Image (cartoon, rainbow, N blue to C red; front, side, top):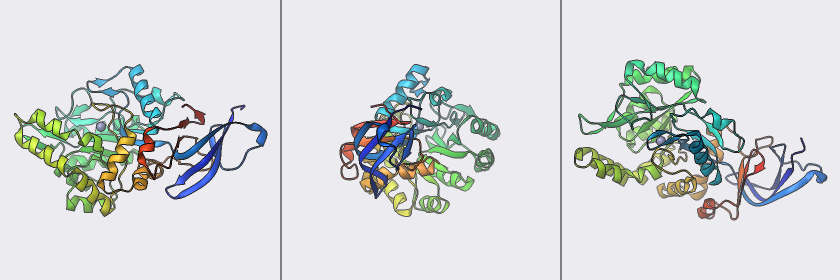
Length: 362
Ligand SMILES: [Zn+2]
């Protein structure tokens, strides 16, 4: 009541190739019907996209584990000011429900805390458990989260000196079934090849990184509709991970370098086969927040057009996560740019305006 009406003029991209000239925001919601003229008090102009989606981002986490609330807020504000207005959190040891109560922070879909095998992940991040407890923890995190559960699917196996799957397939099958019973989808961190075979067999919904995709698993993923979130900025750090492990684990280091070298080819082959691909920055942990424009641009190196890469962070990503784009009655979360981002992705790095829940926050 009494909130200003916002008039949005220019080129409103309601789909990858569908444009309208104007829309309005009334009481925080989008409408394409002109409200009474007298009510109009504010206007913005430019090229409009739905609020960007970062489908792999960690709010509440840094390189050492959970962070203070203030730091989590800063992380979310950094993402917001880069145009990310919907975050699928890919695992956080901090209970970030408080983020969802703040009107000035991006919309957040939580996955609860990562679930990893004992001593097979970064310290202080995950519940570290054994396979006989997997179903119990999956159910617990499914109930705590917002429809997603995050597993760590592979990690260095120090006995073998290489990447290795963390879970027996039998345990994974029970875990994925349990998550689905709870109404949650399952995603998993996987760098190597074998874990992808196992998770596909268990019926997983999504894979993070997915650098180990090979022709057979690409076919399986396409057939089963398993989505991937490559996080190419993160994959760009594989040579550093390899260098750090070189002396003790030369086989592992060589494997990581190989996955890195063929990353664009791997994700490009998945794209050609029809595997659904979404934008994720993997901010939090060791990477900074606010890199969504950079990740979108990286995806074009796999053969995606600019429009396709934008789609992976906007209209298609929102549909995948069950959230509205720029449609009548939707919560008014959108970004206004100076130029057509489909023509030049560099415009994404510098939004002119950011509108969150109908409020011009920038
Ligand atoms: Zn991550």
